[in-house]
Length: 152
Image 1 (cartoon, rainbow, N blue to C red):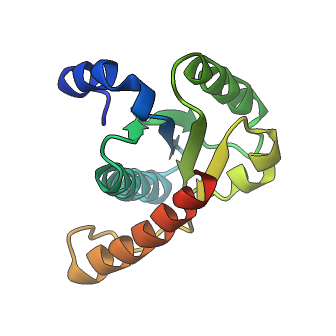
Image 2: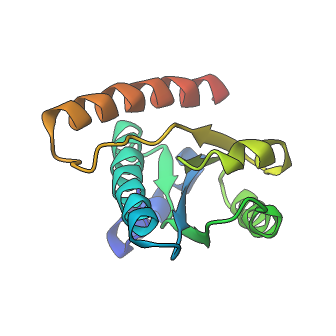
């Protein structure tokens, strides 16, 4: 389920079965053209990832809108905010909170998060529609969905 009116209506009728929240973490930078383009490709690819994961577990996972943050090695303020999100999610039916990111800086903060980090190295291809990229995404989504199952 996703953060839209139709899915929210379904969520409220089956809330007790939807126990997992997925929050995509998307880095934004204004450093230069190359870094901005890299950030945009990662966001595009990341959203493909999380939408595919949501499809795999439709009716069990709720996909939040992307959480955007500025590029930085010090993510402590973001950790605080994300933990607030996780706490609020716990007030609903969500027993499991997963954060998805390509940003390796989150690995250093993983133990401080009130949820589980799903980190993947970013795909370097800028063409998300190519067969090669689609194959890589499909393979990695399968790995992530297997990992999510181990937490249930």
